[in-house]
Every structure is written in structure tokens, then in C-alpha cells.
Length: 376
Image 1: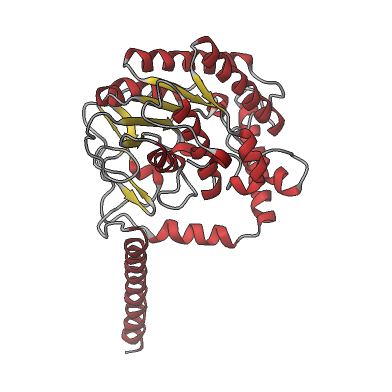
Image 2 (image 1 turned 90 degrees about the horizontal axis):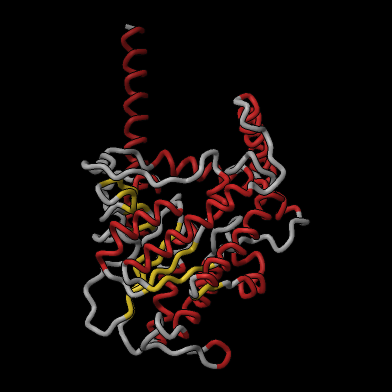
């Protein structure tokens, strides 16, 4: 009798745990639906679930949704779009996570801010297609422009690079297209697990997170040493800098062959100084992604890539935008981490790009430059 009672108690406990887990998962899904409009049946539990590899290459999955990240039916982050009456100004914004947006509120990412600002300045309809996605390296952008964007015939292509991607173990290359698209995540994929993980991470003191990052970077450097690829490099790799410039020139050629006016933007980061404790911690967080290089090399490579970006723009007679002064004037409040924007940073960035595009004789046809104090 005692064994039967014990078994009943164990079974009851297990059923209670299952019921609690189901209730928690349901609560998370209802919360996502109420806050972001995420469909209850969506199985997406991370940004990685919003990417698809198909005959066009790798890009955002049409119709995907995860928290504030909503992909429209054409595969661009943002609201649904429709064909505009002529004349109109259509801009395709390309880049990695800084362009796709990570920390901004929904609609606060810089391509949306660019669109809002230009609509106030232009006498023609304006549409900005956010073709960026997290991790989208320059060769992938080239492929995306050739295969996916060129047939849409945008007037302007704005490219915002992430030069540090050229400090990966291997030089970036485009992932080959495939015949059969990768399937979406199943609807029963748990969303409560990553939500719990994120909550626990937010509860950990910053000093503890910094220690974990340092230990992880040290472990990765040791693995590189064991593989005889060099545990640590203390100089800017000139071959990777040249590779970045070479690929950027290829992109410009692809834009022009497609009849798209190219606009290049210089990459930005939050490090006006590296002296404060917060700055040092943030720089170490950046090092974790590129463990072979010190924070000093990361900054030097980014600055050198900015010079190369200007060279390419000068040689090709392109509009180049560098909103560094506006962002630095805002200070660290413009950045949520080492290079991703806050809402304020994205607004400043998008406004700077809009002012440059509106003043450009080719790109900004039908628009006007800002008036006094930056007002339209």
C-alpha cells in the first residue's frame, strides 16, 4: 500500500511539473502575442530561426516573427510593402545585425528611421527595404544584391559594413544557394527556455559576466594555440584588410550593373575612449567574438577599414556617409553594446544617412536637404 501511495505521489508530482511547464510555455507565447503580435503557433525561439537558405542564398525568412523582429512576406524586416506609383524613391538597406537591428524597439532600427525622415523631406513616396540580417557578411550581401535585390530595381542601395567579420578564422564567403529551402522551426519548439536563459543572464552582475567572457576568450585562444593557428595576434592583418576592400569594390560593381545608386556608410563603434571600466568590459565583450585579436587590434582594424571605405567611395565617386560626429556627441547612450545602436543611436544614424541621401543629386531626386538645426 505504501509503495502504491509513493508511486501515486511521484506521478502526481510529475504531472504537476508537466502542467507547470505547459502553463509557463503558454504564458510566454501569450506574452509574445500581446507585446509583439508574434503568432501563438510560431516555433521561432531565436534570431537564428528567422533565417532561410534557398535558391537566392541566405536572407531573412519571409513571414518569420520572433519578439519584436517581424519579417514581411517579401523577406525584409518591417511592415508589408506594395508597389509604389512613379516617381518614387526605393532604397535597399543592406548589412549585418547593426542594420537588421537588435536592441531597438520595433520600428526603431535605422532603416525605418531613414524611411521616416525621408518621407518628411521628399515630395515622392519613399520605401526602405531592410535587407540586413544578423551575421550577414559582405560576400553574402553581394550575392543578395545580385539574386534578390537587383530584380526589385531599387533606386538606391545603402550598405553598412561590419569590417570585423574579416577577423574570423576564415575569410568570409557567401553560402551557396540550395534548391530546397530550409524548413521553418516546428511550432512545438519551446520559447520558454530561451526566455528563462535571458532572464537569468540579466540577473547576473556585470562583473560576473565580464569574468565569464574573459575565461571564454582565454579558452578560445588556447584552442587556437593548440591548433597552431596562433593564439593571439597583436597587429592588424593587412591581407584581411585588403580582402575587405576587394569585396567592397565588387559590391559597388554589382550595384552599378543592376542600375542601383550605391551609398556607403562608415562603420561606427562606441569607443570614444577605452579607459573607463565600462569601456574595458564592453571591449572585452567584443574580443570574445574574435578571440585571436586584442581589443586594440579590433579598434585599429575598424579604423583602417573606415579609411578603405572612403577610398572605395572616392575612387568610384560615390556618396559616403560618416555620422561619427553626431554619434560621439551623444556619447555611449547611442550604443547598446560595442557596435549595436540604441533607439537614440539608430535615430541619429538614420537621420545622418537621410540628410546625405536627400542632398545627393542622383539618390535624392524629389527630396530636399534639411533646413536649419537639421529640421526638414
